[in-house]
Length: 194
Image 1 (cartoon, rainbow, N blue to C red):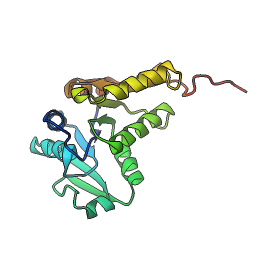
Image 2: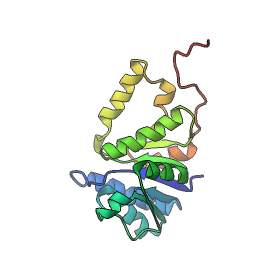
Image 3: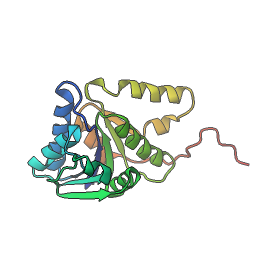
């Protein structure tokens, strides 16, 4: 059973209403499911939208934000808990340690960094928590195609490609995360014992 889900998402809202709608729907869904939201602690963009929606629906929201972003006045001060850390690395580590699963909504470099890091940790066996991608409005279609190319060109095994659960509907994605069983396989496809 998932108690806390970490959501990675943009500090911008993106273009059109689809991204904000998905963030709000995900926040409400987590609250209605009794799952605490762990996220980057911002009050702006999709980050602010998911936190506000979760709180408005009676949920619990834990933010983790580096001090440099607090100084830029983007910290959300209305959260259940707000942890202020010194570095981005501390932020990612704390969010991962607190969470039972991860979801990436649309975002930029930071979102991709956070998602890539938890997937890498799963691939090499540092952690075995599920990771999901909410592919809103086809936003991640090219990233998914690149991952398929990585499998085709043997930089990524099919088993490790499947570490990233993908859906367009947050409710279905949450169900996949709840049912997830991690694979038990070596990272290296062409390992030769010496």
